[in-house]
Image (tube, rainbow, N blue to C red; front, side, top):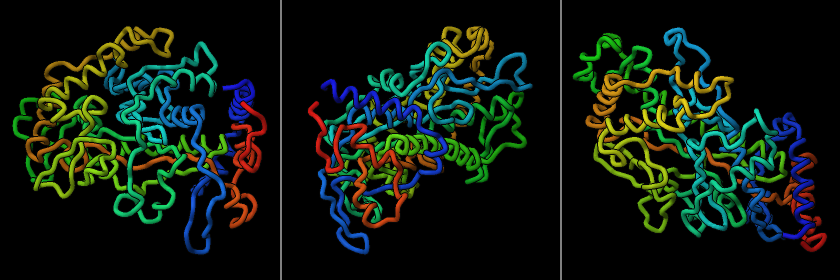
Length: 440
């Protein structure tokens, strides 16, 4: 990269850091027409006169760090009278990210694809890659600290045929097009349900099987720990886990689309991709999606993906021998090295070892209580969770370079922000025709 390009990017980053939040909020729109796109028919029929322009590595990392970057150590749960003088030991991760997570469970991760391949971008257990107490957290710093996180899974862009049922009909012309970046947040609902069951048990609650109108056999031996006479319905707990995890997915995507406004990139947040095709359960070997393992059962109306081995594995069989092993792994994530309740994990407090070390670890009886309930669900329904997906996708973010000519022709003034109007010049040193102003 030449000095001209470096100077261009440095200036663009300075302007990015100063972009007003309110302008990103009030200027957010879905802007789907990218350089190289074509709408073949209808009142907005148009063919771009430009070639697709892929995002640079810097642009890609800025979008990714906005959607899933770590931003320091999260502050945990400040107080709960039930636990005093100990702290409430709910969180499963020590680092905070750009999006919130219920009680700090953090069970979602990001995948992404572009012209250079398919990638995994893990950040939920990295700890704090930046530290606001000792350094200024800037866009440049976020990019620098997260640059080594992407793990390439394939040299090919993720293949999704531009047709139904793989894409919703209104997205066949614009999704996953050449030059675009497609970011795919994925939630481990199995792990999130374990976190909910732990939360319940920590506060004296248990579940019953409302689908089959049945109490969980064996739970009575934990009557001193949980209320076995007034349990919560299983479906309530599973819906709780699903909706809490979906909040992670949605707010991750929202962070991404706000960054698009500030950078002047086109794109939008949407859910119009068939999630089974995306996860690898399309049934078509030519459309492997993310390559997740999935199982089928006559009791289930749809396939059930559980993860990709060695990359993203849900906390349940077949990735663990049984639910007791999954519970043990979850406890290790919380209380083991790097976890939020390990004394040696750094933190945001003046006495971080004292704060983290004051949490009570889950003892054997506690883990057995949670494992009994989890194993019942798995044995009864053949999967965990029993009534909602083990792995879940809801929202996606696509980022691309906007073809402003399309908006100038068909829309009134104000259809895009000044950042979109000047993006090619400020970020790429190109004129309005896409030509380089000066050699790099």
